[in-house]
Amino acid sequence: MRKKKTEDISEKTADIMIDNYLLKKRIQNDYHISVDSKTDDPAIEKAFLTNMIEYEEADKGPRCTLRSLLPAGFDLPPVEQLSRRDLRIKLEAIQSILSGHNISIDFLPKLPDAVAYQYLLDQGLNEEVMRRMPKGFMFHLDGCSGNCDQCFQRDYCDAFTEMERRENGGG
Image (cartoon, rainbow, N blue to C red; front, side, top):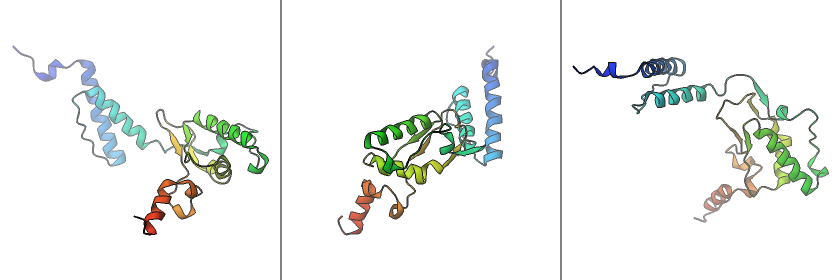
């Protein structure tokens, strides 16, 4: 006599399926998201559902400014006091420190170091982020607010240049 399909699954698989049911209910109740995964593999579904919850909760918890993640006594002199070489070294040091917190500075490649550093001093380092970034998450500081007219990168931005060209009848 052939066993029923439910009897063919292992106890571990059954436990995962129960976990998945509970995860789906949590997602539905807490985040008002209906989940209909398209996989027959309960382990893959569980990983997906767990990632959904981590994503939804990523911005909860204590926050801090990027500046507060720099070590005590980390020197941030005015841009005018730094040589080109020292400016590059300072930017690389800031990026290195922040990357240890899953934070990446992603300004436009054409942006001069002096402009990037000045933005960090004036605004960028005041951005708030999660004190502890969840595993697998990354915060990208790109400096783009979508308001091209007031953007510190606009003179180096291909998208802004193209938009200006189109607005001025260039295509």
